[in-house]
Length: 341
Figure 1 (cartoon, one colour):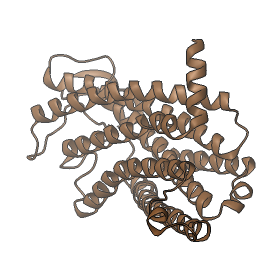
Figure 2: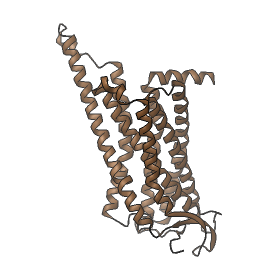
Figure 3: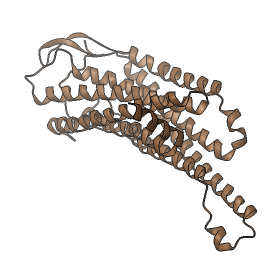
Figure 4: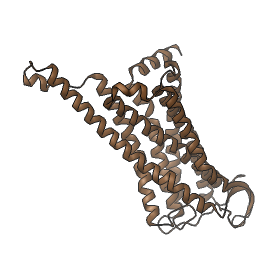
């Protein structure tokens, strides 16, 4: 029982128990509202992609991304509900629930991290694919076939599950007695080896992958923008030689090119917004080892983590508006089937 995680946490000097509880209540409520909106948008996206026909690699990839974001939002909402009950117990010590909400929120939170790793890799793949669409348009269809895309997506999900199975094996929820509140109920148990397992997984999933994907997305965005600029300059110089200089200067990119650059910019920009706080907090963990679950700054750590989940949920919520704005076929099919219902 030495590894029992009590619901009554010792707060650090940086943040009081009351400040911790109020902050968590507010952020959790925001996540629940945003996750509800995001789930609705991703369900609409899934429905529309099915109507479009899953007959090419990119459509399948967008479909799987929407499905993955839907799963993330479900567990993010479950985690937030756990935080609400957990904070209610902290603010009202005489009230205890039949199941420890703290244990549930930690469990659901780890599932969110696992699912989000898949979102990171899939989003990076889409950025690379859109970059290739501009830089190497002739090879684009052959490079991203249905078989290759499906194989990649299966590998991403299998890798995410395999990476986090050891972590889930080192924690469990079973009935035990909490002497601090004198209650016996299902609560979180952590294995003595969990910290070692977490350090290994943290190095791979929470440090290496987020940093590498962020660099790749930035590079792809820069290469694609440069490719579009070069293509536009080439067309202007070859097809508009006889035109006046001021008319050639007023030429703009085609609508298709603008849609491609806009879609990648939006997806990449929101991904970077989501990913940068994770990279920053991981750097802080390296500088301060006590900034972790069960450490001296446990409460502050959880506040940062749930704030990251809010941003990640926000990232999932913008997918449907991006598809709707940047994909004419997606937009027309959405209008078509929405009118029928």
